Image (cartoon, rainbow, N blue to C red; front, side, top):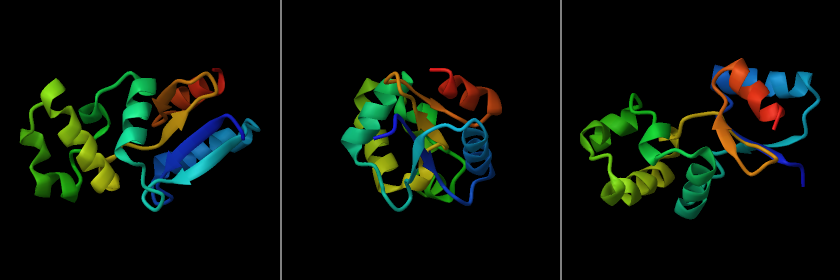
Length: 122
């Protein structure tokens, strides 16, 4: 299995840019279309641990689903963590993208060329 995995939405320009850069650098990676192959709650917890972030840090609060759920009003504390993770698993559109899991066990959100290059250097 190759080391890196990138979670993408093919409709997202930042995801396409990240893929283009990975290809240009000859990186080995697997693509995960996370809207179709939805990560479960445990997997989201694992990626959050690797990112060193909280669920609200990777939530796209501008999405229609977020407005429907009233996520902006949700508490951002340890007691609410599971509620956020459940929402991300049930509404994967809310997950910030692209997320790249690197060979060294870490992960990052690859929204800039700099971030993607950081993943490549790990």
